[in-house]
Structures are given as structure tokens and as C-alpha cells.
Amino acid sequence: MRFLRSFSFYIFFYTGTVFFFLIFSPVSFFTRNFVVVLSTFWTKSVIKLSKLILGIKYEIRGYENIPKSGSFVVASNHQSAWETFFLGSLFPGSIFVLKYELRKIPIFSQYFKKLGFIFVKRDKAFDSLKILLKSVKKLISKNNCIFVIFPEGTRIKPGERIKLNSGVFAIHKFANLPILPIKLDSGKYWINKKFNKREGKIIVKILPIINKEDDKKKVMTKLENYYYN
Image 1 (cartoon, rainbow, N blue to C red):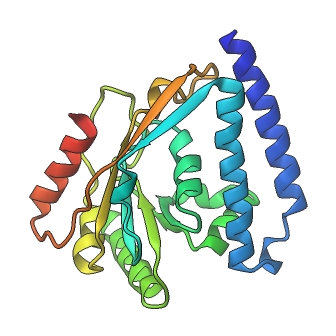
Image 2: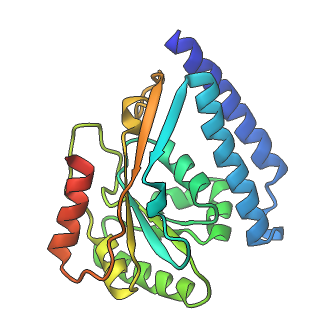
Image 3: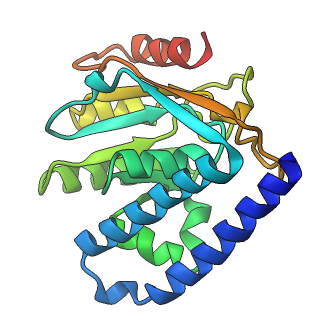
């Protein structure tokens, strides 16, 4: 049954994705607002499709912790591809900080560019940090922005832990942006790099804002406790 559900999902997902992005491929002619509408529609469709076919539901706890206005950075743990769709739909128009390799994906790369996504090279941490901070400061000088970053830097299996990347603290300190921590357990159901997915409910915990905290160790320890305890 799990195989049939997963097979059906991927048929609809890949067919629909190719069809959708072929129709809306001339991204250079679109405004950013229109690209936000398109990308939000697509991410919400994937989440709904995973609920309908795979039986993967979700529950949000702590919705009241989301700031009502102003710029901030979402710092989420990372267990699967599910949260990339989910966070894109929860925060329409948000700017993701992604690994540089994703910049090369055909068609998607054009959408990423139009949306203003920031790409970092993990093997060049210092240079990437300078580019990250420069990009963030430039963007927030023009508009209020929501940034999405995964401090773990890669997908981590449930129950495992990794040293967090401190780039999120640098954004917090030098760009003066509050951090909105998010913890989720998507890896229990949307199993990373596995064809078969598992029916269940993903719990998304939106935790209290971290603001005006200059102690790097304190911020990173708080995030680690949120993610791993």
C-alpha cells in the first residue's frame, strides 16, 4: 500500500511539476510578485497532494509566535524535502538561503534568481558569510523580508544531531534581524532519500522569537536544544 501511494504521488508530482513549469518557463518576463504567486501555488499544491495521496498531514503549534510585521529570519531544522515546500507556502515570497549546487537546476534556477534566493558555498564559509550578510542587508534596506535558513546545512535523520552553522547568528547580530526558530519532525514520514513515504502527522513547532541576543553560544545552544531535545 505504501508503495502504491508513493508511486501515485510521484507520478502526479513529476508530471504536474514538469507541465506547470514548462507553461510558466519564461521567468525573465515575469514580475517578482507574479513569480511569488506561481511558486506559492506550486508549494501549496505539493503539500496538499502529499496529504491527499500519501496521507501526510501536519499540525502547526505556536502560530502566534510569528511576527506580524518587519523582517526576520526563520531558522528551521531540516529532515526532508517536505519543509522546503511547506515553509515556502507558509511564508509566501520568503527568501531561502540554499547551498550553491541548487543554483544550477534548470528552470528552477530562474525562479530562485527572480525570488532573490541567496546561495552559499559550504566549502568557502568565510566568503559565503560575507556574501550572505551583504545580500541580506541590501534586501532589507529596500523592503521587509522573511529569510529562511537551515542551520544544520543538510538533511538530518530523526534522532541524529549535527553541529549547527552559525550563519544564522551572524544574520541576527549584523543585520539586526530576529530569529524565528522552527522545529519539525517531517523525517518520520517524508523519509529522506527513500521512495516509500509513511502516513502520519508532522508536528511543526513555531517557537518564541530570539531577539537582541549578542551571545553567540547562547543563541546556538538554544537552537540546538530546540532541535534535539
